[in-house]
Structures are given as structure tokens and as C-alpha cells.
Length: 140
Image (cartoon, rainbow, N blue to C red; front, side):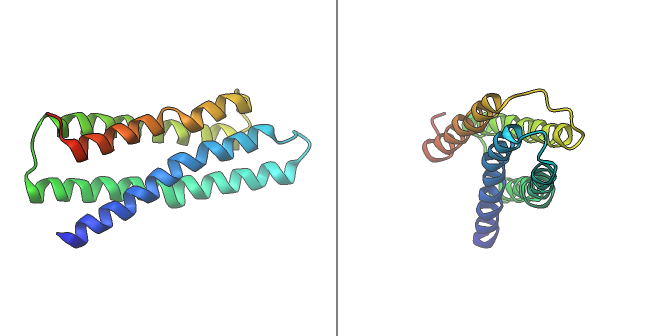
């Protein structure tokens, strides 16, 4: 089970790194000049590779190994239900970022760089802190 725990942590860190960095790429992409076709194309490639090549596999494997740990240890409690609800919010955030990747790729971006700066900080950071709190403290 130690190997499963270790793999779960590795994939979770991979997923969260993508969730934190992808909105930062959106900031730079939104700030790019419309005349900079090469730069815009580069951002599209970076966003696609980060989302589909790193973040999504990290999310899927985090969930798979999380379920494996849950079934292996039979953990139960209110804190776990709260944690799973927060993880579900992260999955929704992940899917929303995928929609934004598609919007940028198809030239349908409707937001400025300030929106993406806010998206870079909120909601992922508070949710991550809450999940870590629930796992470590198990308040209920």
C-alpha cells in the first residue's frame, strides 16, 4: 500500500501543478498581441500539451489511486465526504479549464488577462488548502 500512496501523491501533485499553471498560460495568451500569430500558436500548443498530456492523466490517475486507497483502507467519516465534495469541485474546475483551452484554440476567448489572473488564484488554492486540512486534521 505504500507504493499506492506514493503514486497517488505523485499524480496528485502533477494534477495540481497543471491546475495552477494552465490559468497562468491563459494570462500570457490573453495578453498576446493579435498580430503575434506565432506566439498565439505556441500558447495553443503549450495549453493543449499541458491539459491533455499532463494535467488530465494526473487527474485520472489521482482519482484511480485515491479510490484504490479508499477501498484498501476502508476509510469512512464526515471529513472524507467533505474531501470528496472538494475533489469533485476540482474536477469541475479541471473540465472548465479544458473548455477554456478549446475556446482559445478556436479563437473564442471572451476574457481579458485580469480574469485569468483571478482564475489563477481562485478557486484552486482555497480548495487545495481545505482538502489538506481535512486530510490532516480529520475534524469530523
